[in-house]
Image (cartoon, rainbow over all chains, first blue to last red; front, side, top):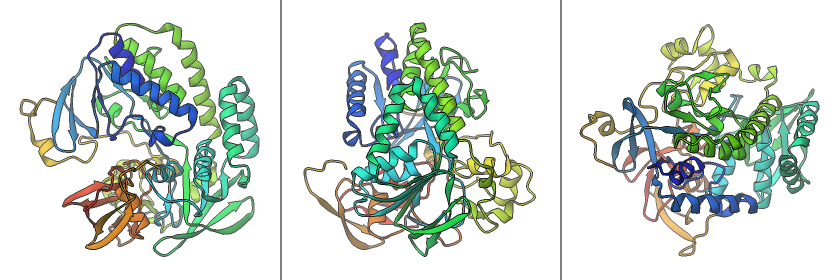
Length: 406
Length: 85
C-alpha cells in the first residue's frame, strides 16, 4: 500500500495486485478489529491509496511470467496479462511449521493461522488454547485471543530465557518496540509463559483435545481445543524466484533503493528480511519513490534501523537442534501427499525427495514442507516453476495476445 | 469480529446437510464451527485449516461446484453448497 501510494503520488501510473479481498496483508486482516494505533495507520494508508489513483485489483494472483516485463494474473472470474516498467514485490511471509507427531489433527494451526481464523469469525470465547513456537508473534496472538475471551493455558517459547533477555536489552534502543512487547505481555499477564518449552505431540481422534509440552526434562499433558503453533516466518519467495532475483540467507538481496538483482524489480517488507510492519512501510515508501525516479535518501537511516531489528529478531528465533528430531518415522512431513519421514530417509536433496516420494508436489507445492525439510535435512528449495499458484487451465492456455485487458 | 449489521446468521449446506452459521465468517470457519473437517487427505485423515492465509491448501473444499476453493479466503454466503472432498 505504501509503495503503490508513494509511486502514484510521484506521478507514476500504478496498478496494485492483491491476492486477498481487502488490502493490508495479514497484519491488517479484519482491520476494523485491529489495535487502536494500527487502525489509525491503516485508515490513513487506505485513504492515501484511494486518493493517489492506484488501480487496485483484489483477489488477483500472479500465476506466471509469459514474457519479460509481463505477468499473467488470475482473479475470480478472469485472467489477464499486465505489463510493467517497474515491479515492486511485497508478497509478505508465511509461518514456518515444524512437523511433530499429531500436527495434522484438525484444531492444530499456526499461531498466526489461529489468529487469522479468529479474525475470520472463529468463536474462541471460553475455548482452551495453547500457543507455542517462537517469536514475539506468540505474545501478539495471545493478546488478541485473550481480548476475545479465549482461555490460554500457556505460551511456550522454544528460545531460552537468556536469549530473550538479550533481545529485550537490544530493544532498549527501540523504545516503541519494547513498549509494544510490554503491552502484549500486560494483556496476557495471567497466562503462564515458559521459555525452553515446546509441544512434542498432540492427542485426539478427529479433533485436537490435548497436547504434550516438554519443558526441560519434564513433559506434561495439557487439555485444549486449539493449538496455535508457529516457528517464526519465512518470506513468500515464489515470485522473486520466478523472476530470477538473487536470494541470500533465505531472503531477497536488495540494495539501498530496495532494487533486486533483476533490473526494474524491487522487493520490500518480509521478502527482504522478516521485520514486521514498520520495516515494510518504510521500505515500501523507499521503493515507491525509487521506482518513480526519486531516491529517498532521507529515509535510509530509518530503514537501516528496521533492518537491524529484523536481524535481532532472526537471532532470537533461531531454532534449537532438538527440532530436527521432533518428527518420528510415521510423522507426515508433506501434508498434501501424506509423505512420512521414513519415506525420506536416504534422500540427498529436495529434488530427489520430490521425484521419489512426491514430497512437495502437492497443492501447496512445498510451501509448508519445504521450510520444514530445510530445518530437518538441510535441503534447499530453490526451484520454482509456473504456475506458481493453482490456476485454471483456461488461464494457462491463452497466448499473450488473447487475454482480455484488465 | 467483523460487523454484520444485516443478519446474525445464515444457512448453508455442507455435504447436503443444512447448517446455520454466523454471518460474515469464512467458509473454513463455518466448517470448523459445524464440526466438519475441510478435506480428507490422500491417506484418509481428516484435515482442517493450518495457515489460515491461503498457503497450506488444507482448507480446500468444493464450493458451489467449484473444486479446490481455499475456504479460508472466502466469505460464507447464504445458500452456499459446500462439499468436502
